[in-house]
Image (cartoon, rainbow, N blue to C red):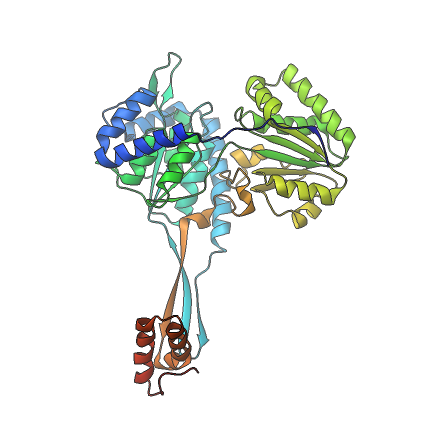
Length: 434
């Protein structure tokens, strides 16, 4: 392979300063509760209302301010996400089976009881994320979802509450409680609980480096979905791909922020060179977010020319990107051979933006090469697969000799005794294998 463009070296995204700041906020909120929440919200967001819990009147005002056309589009997106989540849920089955005479083993799906959903609202108020992290746990059967987002600022820089379309989306997606509270203090509030909010069992949602670090430090106190960093895109393209479209899709994801990598992997030098020219044309011309996307591309954009399809697969699996588009003659071949990606987009019509906003698959996905070992957020993340056993005396005859012998071999004599007592009660001789 050959690099026609290579990314600049990236420093550590989560510095020791970030880790220390997050640790202090979490510790203070755990110890002091609402007092610390108020202090940090005032300090970081200039926001200290009488209550951080959003009331019904505020929700109604937000709903009234959202035009009907946008409401319709939000409803469409919500229906697609919920439908796909229901299809996924159907693959999570309960079962019970007699595996030996007198031994019945079973599996049961139990939803998590309470989830905290965080929606990022910094540079872009991404209310589509509220659908992904509120609707999906509700489809899973989660009884209580607490949604949170930072206050939005008006044209004078004064915080006024949650961005209206976001608040409307949270409410209509099924949030049971909504907090106007941002960042680390929001995650701490829902994880530890305080006067107005019962603690949750799990927190989900994307955010900045502070939010990601807070989730890392809170893991164990609560469950988390995954540790998502800056969004990423890679595109696999052969000589049939359109460089104009490739350039648009690369810049489309790069607009998330200056730390968002965008990578083209192609078997065509001609396509690679023309895509580079197209990106420059967009950035020098009328790309709407060219200041942000342009910096991301200049610093973290890559163009890699490979010998053939097999090498493109090897390179892509090493990149292990969050979003992976396939713009080739035979996208299905890549579906069969690729192994490391967060979500796959097959054919030139399958753009990442569809999944980010409205198509139905979840957009909370693994970054920083974590797709090597995990997938993204899905309905199963909110469900515990638990097991159970039913054993009769006949079952003890089958299992006790082996279980007891293994326990004795491990020197766990108390374990062995619990097996032997039951074995004696069935009338079989004790102390041996089967």
